[in-house]
Length: 123
Image: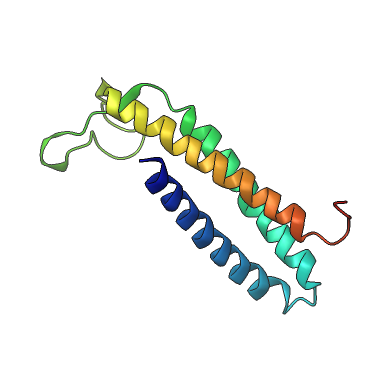
């Protein structure tokens, strides 16, 4: 179980790293920025975004919007009646797990950004 979870987390890390690297280079190089600086700022930005996302996902309350029958959700946003329900234990567990994945992935991406930043020596 732990090995499979580690493989999935490593896959997410590699995917997030590859996308971050590609987008960072696509934005930074045409602007004439240093490659290492461009990559480090990209990893800082994506890692910070994931940390903040993990915080907000983890702080979602135990109440969920009850979906109406036939797609009726109570009208447009902020209009009409809203019917609420308590989240199931599975939904609450999923929220905590998703938050943990976002936080761990964000923290690791920030560490990659620190390693890629050539302005400071790590040793």
